[in-house]
Image 1 (cartoon, rainbow, N blue to C red):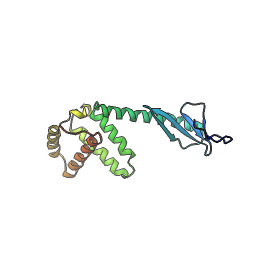
Image 2 (cartoon, rainbow, N blue to C red; image 1 turned 135 degrees about the horizontal axis):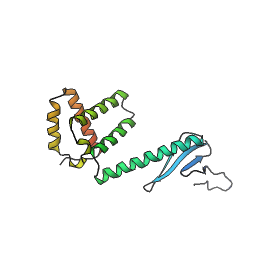
Image 3 (cartoon, one colour; image 1 turned 120 degrees about the horizontal axis):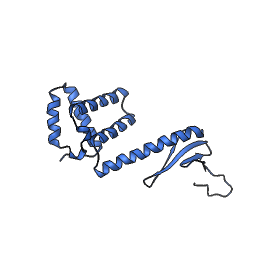
Image 4 (cartoon, one colour; image 1 turned 30 degrees about the vertical axis):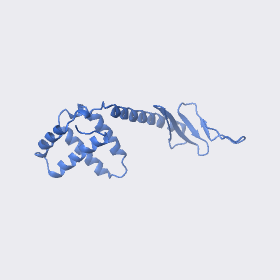
Length: 168
């Protein structure tokens, strides 16, 4: 823990009996302090109660480790379309610039995409070709309205662009 370097001053941070849980003494708030893949992450748990802090710490740790796993999978190129959709949905939920109904509509478009393209969820995103997308678009365009078609295409692009996938 970092301590003030001046002699005679009280420390600002204190450890707790729980690993990865520290307390900021001036405010009394608890913070998570974890190391994930060599990176030290410190985040406020926004509480001054240790019982609440312990619960939030577990959730925060799980979330951070899951995020790292999905980034590693994307970087290694071993990501299924279903995993890419999961990442897209997490980012969609966290986007503060979209209204709730816009988020729901994007979820509807994802569901329509997966219903209309059987087996897409299990496909490796790097194996999806431009030709396959065009074939799917032709079949899908015959069954739905132009607005739904355009928004579903846009959603597909967002999912693939977020994963930095380039068509071959």
